[in-house]
Image 1 (cartoon, rainbow, N blue to C red):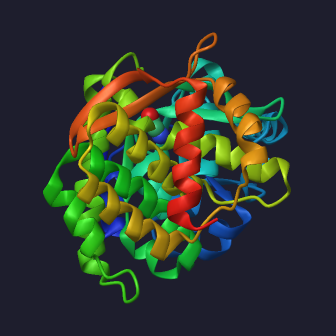
Image 2: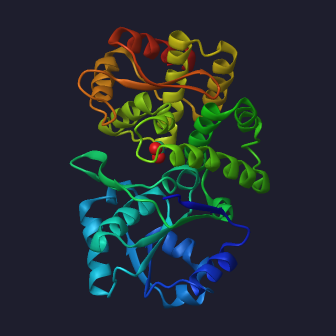
Length: 352
Ligand code: GLY
């Protein structure tokens, strides 16, 4: 089923039209404590939102748990949700992932709409039908592929996004640039991130999300080309997990950006990704993301974390690499020695 992604001109007006004509018997709206306070007021002129039943959960990834999920099921169940009800998820990736999974499982599945409020959720998490929760200490360990009825992108929400959350989302956009075409990649590197032109950002978000949509449409369940979206994530996830284990957590997109540094170098040595484009991308990442420091004593631990990533089977580590921008090589592997060489390169070029 193709998921409709709408780049809104005016969310309130357009969503109001759709809800007015919808045949759902009840509308539920899921927010976290932040989006309830900061984003929901912008939708409150919509009559169907005024009548909607509110479900409010705690913000942040630490609450993407079975307990929060049960709380949402409970709220749906006790407040009369039926198989013909609609759940609106208003928030970042935590709300859209957990809300999507609640909708996918409640009464074996009810309709849901995502209204992402962060850049990361707009270009990645809320689009493409991956839903889920963290479980047993592992991120997104339990979930389902369950596309939203539609995803509404209102970039006006981004005006209040803080610097680090902006760059966290921008890393996934850089990834979309690298896996699509040189023109899109170059405009992302040129974009003035110090003084954001929100109209230009909206156009970039539209282009970025189309890259993901095209790939997901071709391979919704990640049997093949959807693995392109994992560029930067094999080593990025290991950085993210190490950071968490060492009590110095980093935002997902930052870990992905540092993962991209490593995986472009791996692309260069294994499949010939051009050095100049690798250098330009790394320069942008160094300037905007700083560095996650590691020393060589961490290599074994990072390697173990890569082996245990759910994308891998048995003793091989799976990478998505690039021959050039837009020239994707999925299902690539690298041995331990090569991965350690990549980590040496990362430390040298990032200066740690
Ligand atoms: N975030 C990668 C994917 O949706 O496949």
